[in-house]
Image (cartoon, rainbow over all chains, first blue to last red; front, side, top):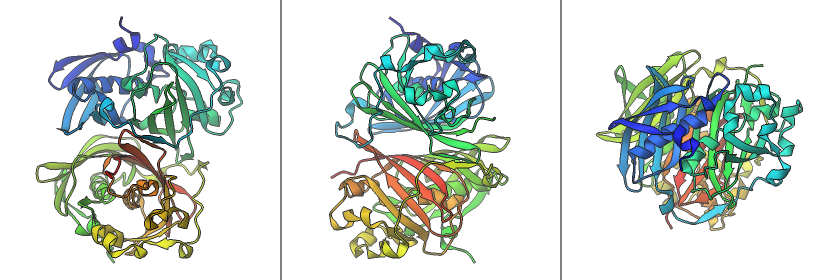
Length: 268
Length: 268
């Protein structure tokens, strides 16, 4: 069985260093394509280039221009491959326009040590059935954000005030997360998950698109099957920009991914 | 007057896209050269390439091999320059070896908005005179870490137990920081400051060198003159790696830089 997500991030080798992709309209949001989905497409090309180092360990993406649905290429340049990790550069292009330029280090997460000492606190979430599903979003929101139809999200009821005009002002969002197609999470899909929730600025009373300048994700472990819990937070809005930290916890209670992005504050 | 730090990060244009540098032995630590200093050298070459966008806003560096004192080159490739920011790739090389490959977005921090809503808490530090100076480090430590002689650091007394064999286990370090040469902080020097303190793993009872795989720094404002406060923290040690988050606060009480690095756990 092939899942929708795997079809949508599929890449086809064109030559030794170039892959073709077809960016899916189903990942549109506002005028562009979701940055996390694009990161998973880039990550998939890197994975194909480095077969013995299948997992993203860290990836940094710089978003240079807004992508559109349709054909794209990913070119990969392996900068160093030795020992347990490899580092490569990758560009996602549409025509002559570079959409994303990225650096990444890949390895094999199953070969890393099992010593875990996480002092971070798991997000304290009511069960999914007591949270607020994304299917409750009004039709006009879903019309400009088709990507929401890819997700089964259950928002923490304390972090959903923005949906009814009552943002908390704390700069925190959290939700249960899974793909609607039933595909279980893996290191590649985590690259999408870290940019799947609405911008944390919604909780500051700033609706609207928050364009990402840069996003770096660390994948720290292969996620267990099942629901993920995702938490976004920001602590420093200044100079027309804000940082958005994301944590992804798996069903086994493990902090499997951490990311931080620098994004532009939505225009009022 | 020329400060030592500016001499040590100086770059000389060799051709349109290449700069020469001379990595200073005074920034040695263990067997290599401090990663924050190297980042400032790369950042200086980028600054020379983009004269109307003088400030690093975000930079991501991937550390591929350990640098040594002596000549190096920095090659810069401007990927996009339009509007208020420019994005470039840069490599720092010694001979045929790439030491660092980086991506960065530059702009003019003085032209960003003044709207600041920081909810992060300032590090609560006793005055510098009641903190523990780095000059108290034993001679054998200073012999393997000549870079400590570049700094006037005053460690928070609650975060210095590791120096006497009693690490707190909390994964937190904080200190007052300034350069001994009297040079005031600026956006370029902040790239060094985010990697200047000892690894936060010292506070977990793991002394030793913690090689950086990747470090991303966000510079959020031009720092005011005077003492900086620097705070390191880690919350997720797993798979032989840990993340180290750094905050830098200026004398005006503003959070001027945030960074996160992924580093290898020190070997016992």
